[in-house]
Length: 205
Image (cartoon, rainbow, N blue to C red; front, side, top):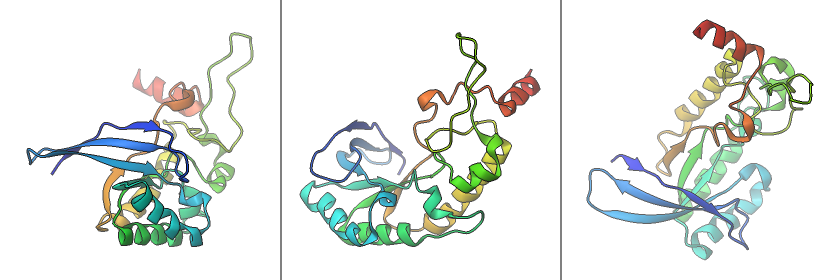
């Protein structure tokens, strides 16, 4: 049935996870309610041979039901333009399934791979002019939420990686939930003064 989520984040010492998510799961087609416990996990940061122990610890030591992953994996999943490598994500999904964890799979669009920035530096978000007098700044590559929401080029690449992910993983039993992007408008990314944003604004007017 349809599901509604109310997540909160908090630290949990002793496990290699970014946060603990306590999620209230409401199933519309049923009167039953239950609280499920989940964690963030970042496969791109850990050796693949250590992931089984991590999944077992998340399931057995923490007692979690679900693990969220994928939102920062674009550089792993598409290491070169149009070349996809699913090995690490396949492996961690297999392990999560083996130990009985559900997976919330995030689209990896919050952080672009280096090759995309190198080929298309104009996809970057641009900040507002400073009251101190300097023109809007473009951050150096390497952080999250750096792209312009209005960049047609970025949207084209984002659509391609998400389409590939959905085609590969939508049928997986372990993938019970999807997260679209991550922290939308976080870190000032909604204040965009790039050429793409200005062109979109003028077209809107």
